[in-house]
Image (cartoon, rainbow, N blue to C red; front, side, top):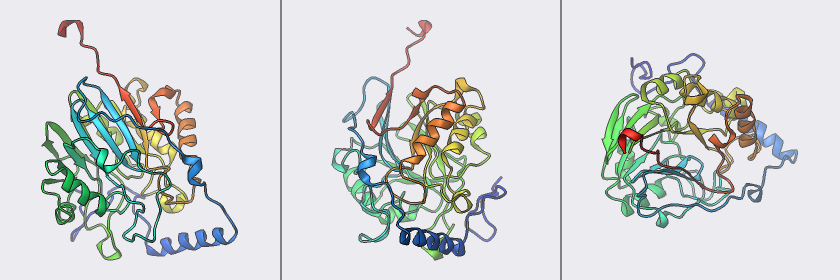
Length: 339
């Protein structure tokens, strides 16, 4: 049952072919990127990724709807009924331990840290710098001391050192009740570590979030793995799934740890156990904010929408939040017997 716990300590992906590449592969990939730069290969400029306004309700919603604001990358503000839930908060200019080097943010956050409504729950998928940002966590810990943080095994110590006062660590399939919100850690295919010496010493995960009659999946940072159908069976049906669609090239290197756009669509279908009527609304994350890999910055949403259409799924149920940063699912109407 705990195949993701590595013998001797630490964690691993338990599925065949899911082991991330090693340091030698990193050097091979970095060398290829350097050659392409010398040849004058250009990247998409930030102006091509311009985005529109957000529509956050503060301090809280009162109409029972489900509202999602894509702040950028894997950071999403979920307003689930009256609850305010934040995923993988990153507001820094760089996804890096250094303020002067590393991937730079191409578009600003949809809202400022100061504009956030009162936070009830913050979920954090793993400890990589583009998901766990020390500056942001310190700021949130000061501004929202009552927030409950939920993270995978081993990540709590770092959060506590950054000022977080309430943190719960979960293993895969474990749950906690945080501020009237049930949060369950679910399998993800990735790795962890903020330095070479700390690789895979802490766990990585996605989270199923249930509150006010709504069910949301935050898949975290993940490759395509066999457990999406089981996640849907155990914890669905989901109203909304936050699925990563970017940072996938080159495939020989990224396949174990990042889904490509087509795999993200397959994951959504798996969550609905293959039935189109049960496939959740998808909000695309993990693209268009930091340049992490080799695909053009504006390619992931095009490929994802094409794959979605190929499955004959309604286009309005795949959210690419560019022209607008907030989308809302209205509250369900009460059945006649409930009126």
